[in-house]
Image 1 (cartoon, rainbow over the protein chains, first blue to last red):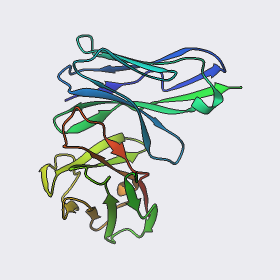
Image 2 (cartoon, rainbow over the protein chains, first blue to last red):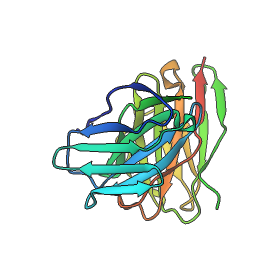
Image 3 (cartoon, one colour):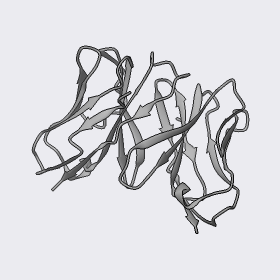
Length: 110
Length: 115
């Protein structure tokens, strides 16, 4: 059974800092990995999807990497802003379902 | 274009009542998924539809939970004889073709509170 872990559960950084959010998973037999953002009381917004054959994806200030062999993914956020404050979830895709981590709640201080 | 929509956005019901939650996927998306987000459990998969059939119902927590999809579009998740532990946010997602190379797009969710 796939297990997805995101540590730490919460993170507070000053504005402008570059930061890395980590995600680890136990079963490397995945089709893809998705990073989502969730604002309080809202649904999920897809940020980046990395297919199993890819190593990384970039969108604006965000860069996500995938290392299937080690069961790790990272989400890099450059020059963080207060508007980046949210919960970030990673999820692995396999066997017709996504398996989610518990998320990292990010707070960017002005 | 329009995203995934869900209704109602909030539902408060008494223990023992039945509830129906609706999901309208993105037009043209053949795959539809239901997930549940609760405080203790995080986000959990419930069921997956490809067209009108549900090849994977493995996440449904009990036989009180059922779902159907008609016309390859709208889906309804039904919870019978609701219990307090059913309180959660129910999220629906859709994707194109259902291949796992394609992104899942999520709706805003239905917050269910069982009193």
